[in-house]
Length: 155
Image 1: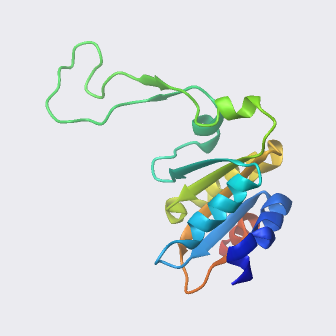
Image 2: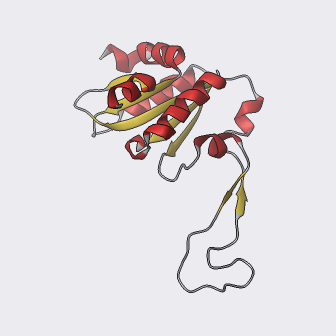
């Protein structure tokens, strides 16, 4: 239970590795405690789903285009059948201006491919302030491991 009181071990591993794969009990609650501890330590946190992430670098750091979902019969006039591209701001754009460390917490990380997971590891190496936690599924007890180590096991 000491882990839930301080979260110091988790934070030390996160700062050392940059990207962690997290396996949490399905009842929930432990992730929220860890997020609270990291916010108290000065991290700017973003909690989002990994579904629909696409290219992680473009989604997180660059202005990118998104097409609206196709809703059936639509006019094919100017936007064609697939719709017009809407420009979307990067998720972490404003937070990169400060000096505080940034934590990106990705839910449902099991849907990400190995290429997407390895690109997240590379992003953490390139941008040293960025730390990423990817929830990879459930477990009986809270456990984590470096995301790079998880990729080496699956290959």
